Amino acid sequence: MITPQQVKDNEQIKTYIRRADETLGALGFTEHSFAHVTRVAHFAEKLLRELGFDDRTCELAWIAGYMHDIGNVINRIDHAQSGAVMAFRILDKLGMPADEIATVCSAIGNHDESTAYPVNPVAAALILADKTDVRRTRVRNRDKSTFDIHDRVNYAVEKASTTLTDDKTAVELALTLDTEMSPVMAYFEIFLERMLLCRKAAERLGLAFRLIVNGQTVL
Image 1 (cartoon, rainbow, N blue to C red):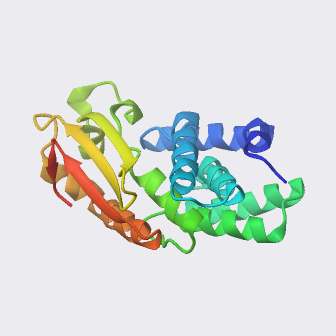
Image 2 (cartoon, one colour; image 1 turned 120 degrees about the vertical axis):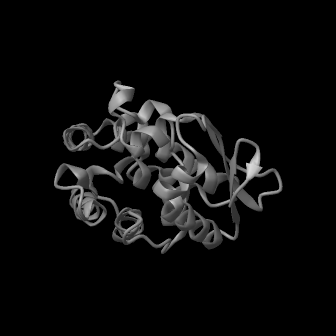
């Protein structure tokens, strides 16, 4: 079996992650580096493990999470589909079984909000992990006077945590938001589509999704 460690150590995958982040940096997007994909991989795996999925499904969630953004090396547009095709070629060459490749590639190909759908539990976990990674450190621009709305909204997040509730009935994204930097409505203007997608992904796993901003449940 192809393990998460083999994927993490693979030089080809490392190159695509690094160069994809460089591409997005040139286009003015927030950070999509090893920090982002590692967070996504760990949370996707952790969520399925806490829900009682088998070890291999949890590992596939990690692999999908780690590789999900490699398609950005080609173009931001349709990067989920490009990434799925790239992942297929890499994982097939490494000898991963077809049924596992299908799971990983369908998850990667269905993670971007413009075309996303939680087609399987791995895809659902990937969506939740990816779309809830909102944090100040993802903002590349260090000149606050030139922040666009995406910069302001991300930078306004002073603290964020995504957790499965103790009773395992809901996934909660709790944010501490600096409302002087960005009002709550600006957050919804940017991220409402993502949050609704998170609700759909949570439902695929038999869960509710809740967004809590400054201690108040807003979704």
